[in-house]
Amino acid sequence: MRKLAIGLICLGMLACQSENKDKRNLDSAANANSASAADSLKYSYDSVKVVSKHVVSGEERFSDTTKAVITFPKFQEADLNKLVEDRVCRNASTPDRTFKTYQEVANNFVRGFDDYLSYNEDNIQTWFLDVNVDVILQNQALLALKFTQADYMGGAHPNSSFNYLNYDRQAKAVLTLDSILQPNTFSKLEAVAEQIFRKNEGLTPTQSLADAYFFDKDVFHLNANFTLTNSGIEFLYNPYEIKPYVAGTTKLVIPYTAIKDLIKPNSIIYRLNNNAGI
Image (cartoon, rainbow, N blue to C red; front, side):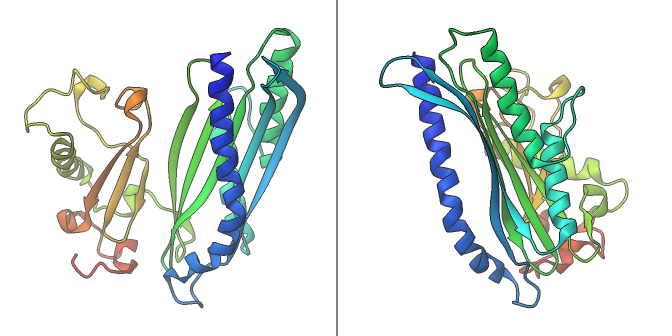
């Protein structure tokens, strides 16, 4: 019953997030003003929701059902809508199952619960899937998106993940670090990043990473989960990636001014606002 209560609390919190999407639809026009009106993308938020018909009750005052909700920005450009949907589907896919639409992802999640319930009739836990795609930065040069997924399928706690996608609006392509950095400079970027990481974590330059972190071979490394801000490259490590679940996410921002010699001269970074310092 305690697990059911935890699940219901999480569902309530996520439901509040979903309700806030209506407000975000109104706010999207204001967000678009990060660049001139002619350069701004116009979008609103839409969602797909699938609810299981099976109601789970633990006690008389506790009853709920499994839900899958996917909320995403809807652009005027069809290619951007496809890019976002494909990324959500890819994040949800497994080695033995792939998806092509939001609806398939939501349907499959709820169907999995219904199948599970068919041979676990005494189950008193509901599941949930909550996927949110947020526009976190957009201007003439860049569209930056954050994909947040929270899910619960039994166990001690829900799981969550946060992933970035950066789209070069001029090149009409997803950005990679290789498209930003000079050739053969990734190791130099990591060296700068490690200094910042150690400072953020209160570590000495030579202190071992073995005890408190999950880095491969106890050696610091950057992942590929990054976004571009107006002042630097922000990397994000998800729960369990380099720290225990209770530590949550870890963010690391590398200022452009610290790596200006590593950035390609014609990189998108030089087209972002407020970067005169590099």
